[in-house]
Length: 494
Image (cartoon, rainbow, N blue to C red; front, top):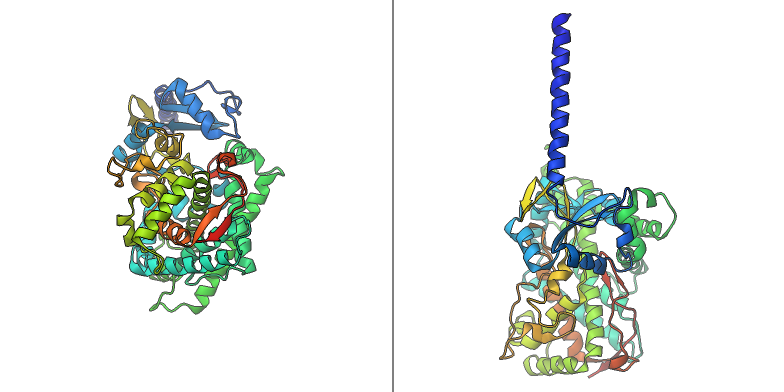
């Protein structure tokens, strides 16, 4: 009895010492966190942040606390990185340590850590590796996907011709076209432009994407644990994301019924075949939940980011008709009017390439990037970030770094041209992020942006109902995403 009592006392003593050591260690680590504004219980730094302009609020704080600082979004403690040097040091020089995925509360409500975009650890590595290889198998980076984009561009030209020069909102014209490229990869087919289910899906993508940019969307990032139970626009965003998940699940069921393991038709088939191969592996990451969430990630990202960039691009070209005229001249000289543009034409079209880069830089579609998370206790500069710390690499601050762009607040293709008018690369051009979690759809997006923009401009001039000086190019919302203002335009045949 005495021995067992002594053993119990010893165990309790060891446990107490371990608890105190853990608390002491955490306090020591927290003492070495980057500086930041004092936070209040529960609401954190809410009073210092403007949820209408979250990006601007964080940049304002950086002017006081430097390029690396800590901010509390409600009870979420986040380290914010501003400017090229800080972002590059973290995501490139310490790529492994900063390769974890942080929280994006709106999407996390449905993804819950599954799928290629929002997962961590071995799951993220396996799904990412598989997704990259499978997308290559279905033509990404090859001539076959270029032909698919060219074909889709042809359908878009017909749709614009059908408007007969009327002023229209180009939003769904562009999203239908861009979405059909990724749809061909993940679903094995394209949608008809008038397909009601397709239009409903695009509306769900647009609605949930725009919610993340709104003031309520940023408020939800801070107080999701409470707001998820309350009425409000967040409930509509969840409904839209759930509708997208239900559609993907239905597509997966259709593929399961007609699957031929020897002849995969699309990304879903390839994943199902891998699931069969690993069905005896109790630790496999190739299961239905990851299939649905990975497919949803590809479909969503492959639809919205490129179409939003093009939408912003059209607005910038109407604001700057001199730039539009120079692109028209280069297209006429290099491509002519008797054939469709090819991706290889890009090498002979430095001005057009510079314009596309400047549209991406100025548009800054994902200004705060997808959040990262450090995978272990990490020394960064003179700070110590505890394992699991969330990190916001502010991509917008890199795209507007005055050390790399002479007039970062202005739309100016000269940012990407040398003295001889040739295209020049810029290390601070990071719209697809950098490091181990960069957007692996970058190659496809670059090809789409070039081929869609040049094909459209080969056939049309852009016309706004306003004079260029009256066109407002300031974004409608800036939060997780940047949403361009709503506008109408006319596509006038050349």
